Image (cartoon, rainbow, N blue to C red; front, side):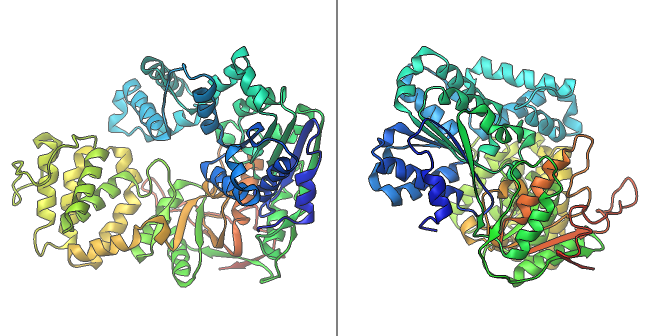
Amino acid sequence: MTTVNEEQSQAATMQLLERGALLIVGGPGSGKTQTMAHRCAQLVERRVAPERIMVLTFTRAAAASMRQRMLRMVGPAADGILTGTFHAVANLVFCTYDPDRQYCLLDEKHSHQLLEQAVRQSFPHLARYGYAPLLGAAKSRLHTSGGTPMVQQVVAAYTQMKQDGEYWDYDDLLRKWLEFLQGEASAAFRQQIQYVLIDEMQDLDALQHCIIQEMYRSCMGLTAIGDDAQSIYGFRGVRVRELQDFERRYTPARAVQLRRNYRNPPHIVRAAKRVLERNENQRHREDMEPTKAPTEDKVPVRAYPTVAEEMAATVGRVRAAAGRQFILVRTNRYGDLAEAELLLQGVPYHRYFPEAQGMRRHAKRCCSLLMLATSTDSSERDTLWSDLLQDLDLDLDLDLDLDLGADPAGPVAGPAAGPAAGLAGAVRRCGAPGLAAGPALRVAEAALAGWTEPSDRAESSSFMEALRRLAAAHALLPDLVRHLSGSMVDPAAASVELMTIHLSKGLEAEHVYVVGMHDGGMPVLMDDTDEEEEVRIAYVALTRAAATLHLSWSRVTETCSWGPPDPHKCSRFIANEHDLYQHIS
């Protein structure tokens, strides 16, 4: 939308220059970003200097979108509005108002690496079992207190490493910003910023809320846009009550709701509203009014005998469709299974997976080595070799083309025979003319075995099985590599995007496929499961679809080595809603 409707215009101009706080509650596809940009434009039109306005967003993408919209509305004046994520703005504030402060900021990647180092140093004996479970548990506790004694020990070691290196992670940056705001040094900044606008307020954690409350003490107006129905970050310490209590925390305050839905067809709106009705504590009930014409009566729900059949059918349906498509999963384990099937069927895809950037580590390394062996482009070879060395934490100056003593005809050596020698030997053996795909894959696995922890091997199992099946289907290695290259493409060239539901929030696609819609998959069933948050996660998943929505589940889980497959039941969120869903077996 390039204009605003009457509902959005009223929200954008309500108590514009008055002292107070305004909460704009907007459901999916209601034009929340457009409304906020229009409110900024109205402030500038009423002669508020752009440099007195601050807009805080939850993601970099949201900040970029906001800047573009404001630029279209107010022209070059938009450049004067302080716009960015909490972390970007905090960093800019220190550079501008406290330039003598010295710190080294860790981005997400380097913070993750430091945490991994803390896990390894705290519990070296876990190397034989794998660090992944403890690493995941520790990461989830960086934002909250508590956890097992092992987790607390890791978090303490991580904190000490930061202090020893004089590093700040993103949480430290926000804590220091809050301390700055509470001190006299912030007087000039407080005096400058008089209008604060917050995007996606339901996603803010307790520390971010403290920053906003501190800013509200001195600013003229606070505007927050959010939707408690889409609060899904409990694992980060986010509490939905923070948004629901907005009018009590910020006085004087008012709330207004955007009700028109420009994204979802009516049958999807009905299904999403029914899911949300399960939450008794939902304060802002979604009363969305769809603007699109009806296309279908019910949302299809397909049941399959096994997970493998569910994934195969879903990817087959993706291949037959056109336009932007999402495959959404509740957990990354299901993402692994879906990605393996995309590889098998040769569908160009992109996976949003911040920590591993797609395919699990061991399988990704094997693919890199095979691609390196068949590449005839020197620039591409240099890039692949450099990336592989970096991933294995080896000297980037090692030269692939030097004779490092590996016998191409002999056994492939791992790290014990010299890291580069083993890898270079494997590359030369895989690149031998006429080598079949199956033996080449075995060479790659053997060469990389020394760098593969048990957890890596376990996480890569579905991918390795897919690679073995592909190797059996393609006689020669170049044929296998061409198949892999056709699937693993840049995001702009992908026909389907694979991601968790959490990563999909704020996005939309014409066609959306939500897999794993069984009890245990959606909702996740664990001792500490917050079922109301699981309802909101399901609500977010359903409302990503702009045209068609496909739900699926399998009657049994994957075959397990420790016992028979577990039987599944259709998700309690959709099982008995026969007026909204078409159940297909």
